[in-house]
Image (cartoon, rainbow, N blue to C red; front, side):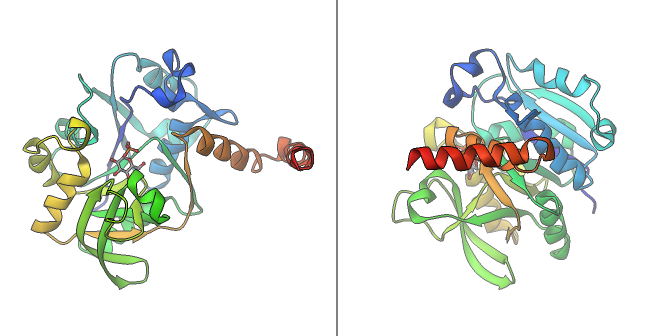
Length: 274
Ligand code: G1P
């Protein structure tokens, strides 16, 4: 079944980017001149997604305005943007549950705005293809992380059944050092089936008093087959100051009008820093 909807939770306050996020939504911070959210929505559009469900909150109407502006991109102009409010910050699991009335009884993608992934084939497309190879089963995108970084992510455990593909039996949110089931982390890309909704509805808050999507996924993995796919692409943690800087440099290098000057500047700075 083709996947029509992608849910993008954007209700977060962006405290890691204060002071700018006191007045600017963190999803509108630019990579060179293009907002982070533009990159995320484009990834979804390139995967064939037709409808974006933004889960927003107070102070985030600029995100809707952005997509109403005259965007010079045919793919983006074709996509429907719908927003749903998350009244209070109750966690990622709760944010995804807010999309239920729009998504209905169909499979859907989830893309987290802090993770920007540059790839030849849209990562969301790579995951939809993986899901279709397994009769429409849920699939999470994974990447390798170091042991010390595993406490920042949802981590999966399972067995490799095919190239880059794992059948899952464990999903743990931010495991304590030394307890991670593997070195495979979920950087915010999911293909989910609607049977996740009742699990989210009945979930109890855990880590930080929030309803965690990873906990509901663990419950789902007990009921049906679920997979992880190690995608191909370069991922940036745009929700972190250093990752944001790295993403900006990466995208600057892809812009012919500034590439050479930016390269010279970086080499010059590197010399001065030696
Ligand atoms: C969220 C998810 C986590 C995932 C991460 C990816 O955590 O809860 O499972 O690995 O995003 O960025 P957050 O970074 O919002 O704390």
